[in-house]
Image 1 (cartoon, rainbow, N blue to C red):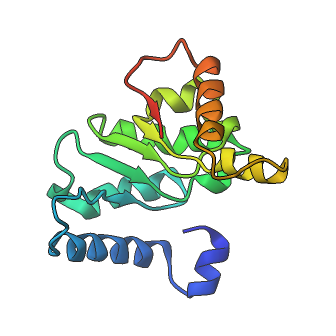
Image 2 (cartoon, helix red, strand yellow):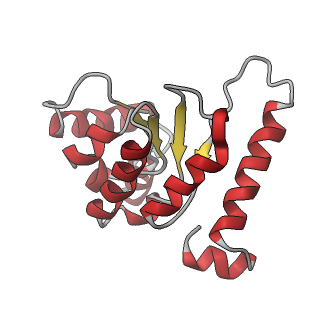
Image 3 (cartoon, rainbow, N blue to C red):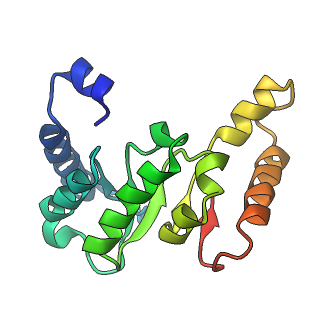
Length: 162
């Protein structure tokens, strides 16, 4: 739902949101062998995400784990990520939010980690590759996570970085 993607696809944010819900329904209709299919909220402005919650309707059961899309490109502006996450939490405080593709700048913000249940990042791999180290070494990921945890150690234990 970022501007450059809308230009490429020729679709609106609303159309992308509709497609996301349709694809979620299609995945749920498949035999996933017990693998959890995570619904993903899409948007750009905070109100887009709130609208998308409504589009999912009762599919978003209380306490469900939900991905938050299109925030990774805002790593340099943690306040923008906070606005999105807070709007979602204001609308549905029960949702367990997962942040996709967050880097240390965003993950170092207690406001962001306080709103997320989990997050993922490939920043550790990119950094290792750029610095001539093994970008596939699990110890690189472990060091990255430990660095983030050290920055946010005052945060509640339920928040995870995966």
